[in-house]
Figure (cartoon, rainbow, N blue to C red):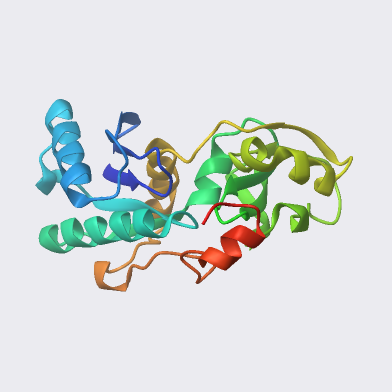
Length: 230
């Protein structure tokens, strides 16, 4: 099985190739907002691995939530490559990909959504992967909440960006947190492999990003009201 994965939901993009049980990953140089940057990274990765595009079985992408431009980019490039090859695509949620990188059993993922908001979700580790306990949601840091019971470990950039508000809002059932991790293409590839084996693929024409929220940016008055700059 050979799966190419694209992850550009944050400022730190990456591409990865899963070839059997081996995953090779490369960071996308600069800020991955344009196909002119992402496509050369894909070509370089495949060349380094000695795998022609035509030998791929599927194209996976981080579907969101995340940066609007980055999500559209990954989805569009995945669609274009898959259509040209006659292969399926495999969308993977970025918060699930992030949670899969954590070694804890009860994981509360929270990513910086900009505009003074966070994306968050919760997952429990089970024998065959992760089980979603709290679906991806967007809220102000003070409005984030843990699932109704159990203790949870926090994971994701929201803890670095808004920890002074987010941690008290989550309360004593938060056992600790790591505010550094971002979703990786290697995680998207591994999750996509399981979906591919179960037949959970899409025709490229049907692929779409998962936004959670519809608003792209704040107005000047909204930024000022939130304490930002005009």
